[in-house]
Image (tube, rainbow, N blue to C red; front, side, top):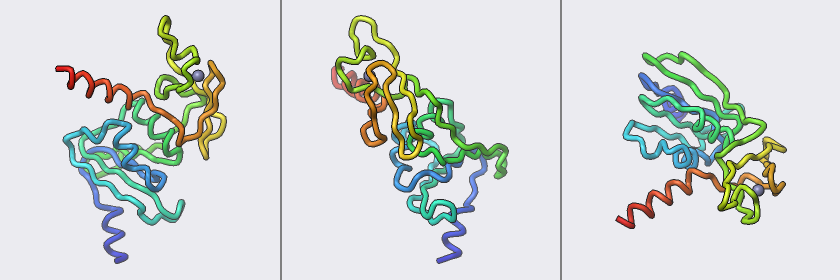
Length: 170
Ligand SMILES: [Zn+2]
């Protein structure tokens, strides 16, 4: 059993990205939110992997893909302790911790219908101030409404839904 666990942890990819120290249970949400679930590349997921640092964690390994800034930010919102390793020729060429920004722009919707960010006339991009990192608490800078992690609605979800609706129209 020990050997198997060790193997899972070190099973290497030749080129791509390893997202490690994801909060246990968030791997699938991260794949969905970042759109990585639509990738045709090989993805290996470890859920509830035992970890010295945080008891259990999730891991995502994805071949031939490097994350962009938006994806890194999305991960930082869901899992502020996550680390990102870039792999080339089976070696880690860069390892960084995700960083939750002090202000989160555009990635999250404010569900308050009277919020100016939902104004039909002049829509403004949302901005949320991070009040607490863990557990996450953010505040809309326009209407001052406060959200916890489980209350957050991400903008990319809406885009996906719109895409589906458009497809249905055709
Ligand atoms: Zn608002």
